Length: 259
Image (cartoon, rainbow, N blue to C red; front, side):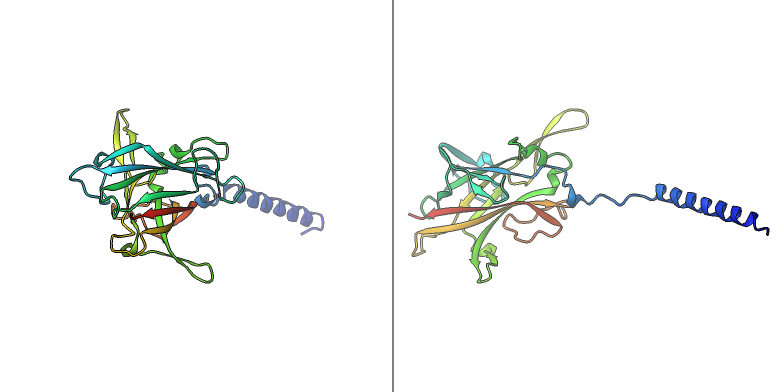
């Protein structure tokens, strides 16, 4: 090979190799988007919890299947707690109509007493965002859990009360209007926890202390996939949610009175 031809061939080979590498780079598939980096909804920044006193109708007993049709509401007995997470630390909203804790009765004082709890969220801009969490894509990913703090260890690790020691029972009462492909609407029950009934069963009549200070952690869980397993969801007091992240944690205090 001549001294003149060799550099030309090497240059042509290098150019061809460069073109091949660039071409392969363009056709390389992009890595999938991690849903944990974009959950598909705004972050809950403000929360309002509204607790309304209610009474079970005659002949009705409380269970996880209790619905709003089973109770009479007392619209005059309403308590509200507002929370603001815009600064990165959850703090109470203060002002007329807002409290820092809920005061309730146990069944020892009023056997048919229950409470309606409603939760509403706003985003950083102050816009209501509950609808974002119940869209067709999101509704089966979200569920609130209501956990009772049982004890706090020396290292600040929290133990939650097992079901046998819970001071309350809860029933998901969410009903949403959904739309079919033909445009008609229907009502669907789906346990999210925006609307639910609580009955407080402790303190009991036999308890020496007739007043109890309860700390409840309300967690909005975001499941990557679905919250349903074999057609069912986790119990309302579940403290460990595999395959889920937390959208918001709220520490809510209750004073429960048995007399």
